[in-house]
Image (cartoon, rainbow, N blue to C red; front, side, top):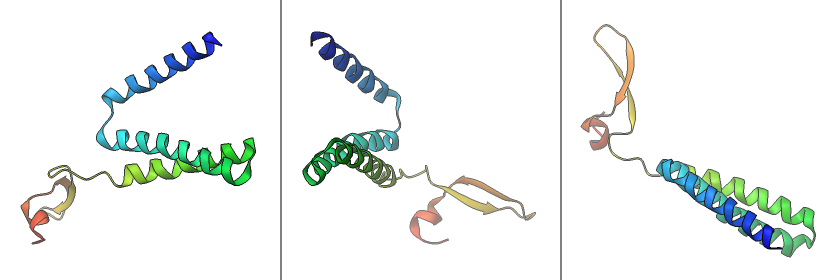
Length: 105
């Protein structure tokens, strides 16, 4: 039993250490997956009452909340890319200028 606790502690430490170098979107997706997985497991167990329902609920909750966490990450000003066309007709992408943020595009 003691080995199991040590193993879980090592896994949790490794999971948290991996969060240090993540971007904000990745951190939100990871947090969403953890919370969604736990919540989904509880709901799956409450509805089905067996292991299969718990696993399906955990997987569904983790996937859904990871997507929501990643999609709801706010964009910082200057990180948004816009498409521009130069005077020769070539299209390129670059960070958006003030026209984009002011709605004058």
